[in-house]
Image (cartoon, rainbow over all chains, first blue to last red; front, side):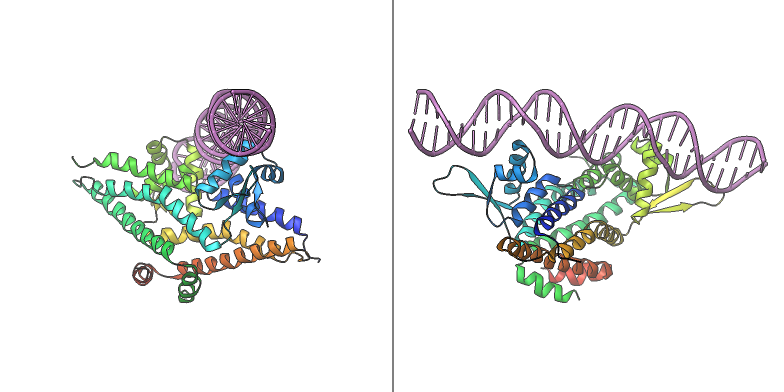
Length: 169
Length: 169
DNA sequence: TTTTGTTTTCAAAAGAAATTGAAAATTGTG
DNA sequence: CACAATTTTCAATTTCTTTTGAAAACAAAA
């Protein structure tokens, strides 16, 4: 069997990255734009993104901006040019760290807040006692996960790949 | 400020659990059924789930079955009764482990397979060289994540809460 | 200031996903 | 077997999400 052509490989990468993201509750197009910029050797303009992915200007704009908000894509300006160029953060550890930071803030933190509040429910019958037990257990666990993620975010790339993973053997 | 009433707290828990899940690409109702069973002191029937969450029979059936497939809910039969009862796995470590196992199999594994395939693309121009670099970097990272998750799944609850998290300080 | 190139917005349309509910299938019981 | 209780299925519907594209806003240059 012959080796795959680079154009086919790129298309497969963009498709899979998008599929994976949408499984994880992230807009498919946002992930495809991210994938496209990850494998682009040079920064791209909005027009190039529209062209490559065959999407509208509004869509391209929205999703590029979301990626910039997530800290996964950077805006680049070239002197003498009015167009904006975009390029993806290529360091995988930084990419993962940014994703952890964002999802933690948007999803884990609000859940922890709710758990805190409902853990203080009045406990005056067997039903509420059982409820409190379950909630406190989940709360304890979530706090640990929270701490772990904080530590991971602070850790640097080498620490992660070397120390942490060797230990995991 | 007075303590929250248990009925309100339960409703808040079910709502938040569902919200969090849908952010993560999981059917909201599936998570609400899960939340309901987590805080139910006794196993519930399909009819009780329909009643509590105000959903249709078909919906209740689909989502309970999905939860059983995920290993998060167990079917219980009472002798002399034809109805099926359902109760949630209450051990949080088991819950998290099951979720990791399922999502890994459904989403990480297929992505790794694609990365393997496209990492072998023919490398005969600067463009394909850059592409290969990026893909191999992502692949290396994903393999590490994969190993880490495997180790986590094998680890037991105490190991997680004690060893791992203490180290994370 | 006016023109021109570029980005942003957002209401409407299209598309995807979840839900319903009634019919069909299944399963235990007399 | 026939009956009754229960679960499962799935086409039609509803609901939620994403995308489009044209108009508005913006910003650099003339």
